Length: 511
Picture (cartoon, rainbow, N blue to C red):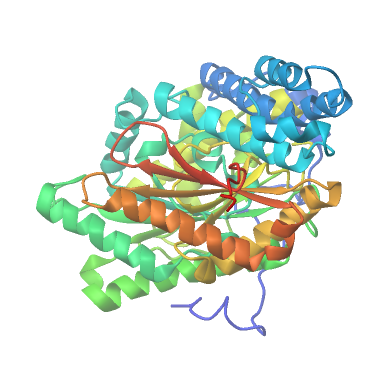
């Protein structure tokens, strides 16, 4: 395997920061400005853009993020009122009216004897805003992505038709990729297995275990296809880069060097496939795919694999280039052109199912390019991090908005420390620099079909909470880190359940 040690040696030959694009005739610069996306020649939407879906996604984003964005203005108003008569009543009325929930009474009631604990109120608001949006996600399915939705069933049928029985995607834990499934790629959330990791460097052993579970269910239950059906497990890594500020706003885990990020992602994919083949023979091979995401424009670039999963780091198909190239074409003409570009960009003859799959992702991404053009003029104003909270543990199926959550998927703080430390470092700049606390939501999903699973999930929450408090004890002592503990039965459609918080009233018995 040509790239077996590419991401492991410090003396490797790095791929160019701006790899060539196989189908571009003119020499465009790697970076592009808002103007290049809003030029008159690009006025109006693309023929492949789903305007109805864009409208729905916009409504959801504006509503959910709007709650988080109103927190600081509301708290500033309360800060001015804390010595007024009936402050508690006024504060609750304002919070209920502006945010949709009430504030912790025990914090408000202390305002007459000590300065109002704004850090605690801020963390409480973030936690309740998350709980509010999370509840709505599971109760209303606002993204039409549940397993019972037409969209999910249609995509699953398409996936099987392409020759894949399961899609497993690992984006970077960076909050700028949290929307990569529902928005960037336009895939129903229930039709994909998503686990985010810093630098998109997924845990190989755990992924092998998930592969084993998937194949076992195919043999025992025919899920999602019969074992004799010649379909494959598709593993995808999504790394990221910045076109506006490539040297500073790329992937922090890879030093904002997109060539390192892509090489490390490919190496992890190859190691995963080798692990499967070494353990279960070559007949159990998996398919691999590497995708790059520009966090400024949401345009993707896909390293098209040959039928044996061979990919080239210095060649890809860029959705933004395809957008420009097919802007004047009809829907059918545009899809045909995209398929042609995908097929011709592989290093050797590609699998037809993979060509169909990639072509659909690129077509879906064109809708997202128009989405960013319409809402933000082509490039997001927050080029860097702007997450609202850190999500720690196993779960968070409901988080699908850009820069809402930094993910740290882990079972123990010890093993997940590198991801978690990156998150705390990010929030040191986002929140602590403004004298605001870091809000951490701990989540452990469990299967209600397994006896004692709920109790173990609750114990896991408290175990991880105690480890976080110990690891960041100085921040906790200063009120600069708060936690919110939740569990959820993954076998049900019901929302998560709150099982504890650092903001709970402290009741001490006096003897």
